[in-house]
Amino acid sequence: MRAITLIQLRAAALLTVVGVLAGVLGAVRFGSIFIAIGTAIVALAQWPRSAGRRRIIECYFPLALAGVLFAVAVALPKGL
Image (cartoon, rainbow, N blue to C red; front, side):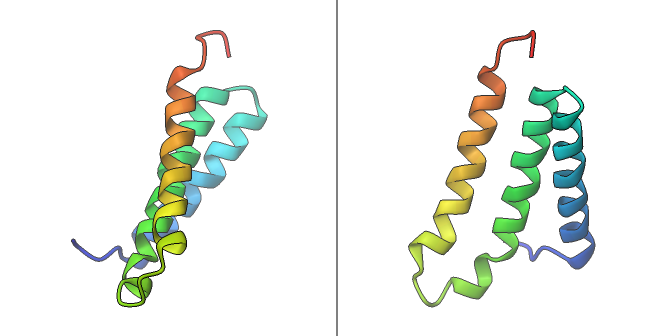
């Protein structure tokens, strides 16, 4: 897997902030999808730091949360 660069990490943080702002302004589906993608990228950036130590919670839990948030965002009704 390719390493995530600092520019990509900053883009993920910006994507998360844009998602939060979009959710606050009323675009809940759009905002939660952006938050899910941004947090998944940040979680994947932390993956090599804990690869040798076998820390399951630190590796898989943030990715699982991002995946569930993405699934809930897709399942939201069209009116929200």
